[in-house]
Amino acid sequence: MARSGWWRARVPASEPAGDGGAGDGGAGDGAAGAGAADDAALVARARRGDAAAFEALVARHYRAVFAVALAVLGSAADAEDATQDAFAVGLARLDDCRTPARVGAWLR
Image 1 (tube, rainbow, N blue to C red):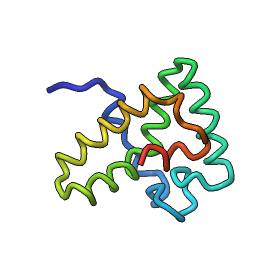
Image 2 (cartoon, rainbow, N blue to C red):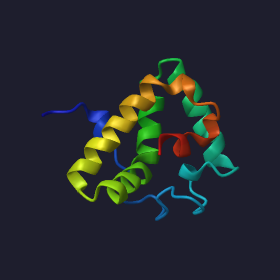
Image 3 (cartoon, helix red, strand yellow):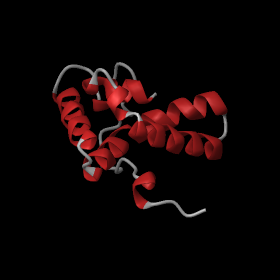
């Protein structure tokens, strides 16, 4: 099944080693700082229909969401499907995210 391009967003290899997991200080953990502020701004833009902002959120948080899915499901193929589902639901329910600066934790 072919999927549209933004589902395939990946964090480039040149990104820092942190996967956005809890406590690594990366943008994905919602820690206070530039990452959290950037997430809040991206959520605000995505809520207004900015597809590029949502793509940026996917790229930023894909690895962390995938890691949780993989730990729970044990299969990379199933984890990829679950990750894509999480982002699809996240997009549909983005207005339900009460703390946009912590969108990474909300997605997981």
